[in-house]
Length: 68
Image (cartoon, rainbow, N blue to C red; front, side, top):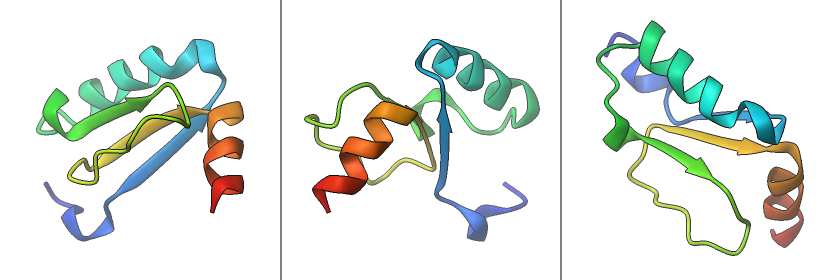
């Protein structure tokens, strides 16, 4: 990856666009395989820290950031 030092990346978007963003990541960053992308659906789940790209909704991000 050309910008390896710039990761991790967090994409915060409307909930209905999470899978769209995942598809766009694969389209524009073909070297980033699905094992490096994580869609975060719930603030209650443990976040896998070995990922490069995290995709979540506004509501989930708000819950995650308010948890501290």
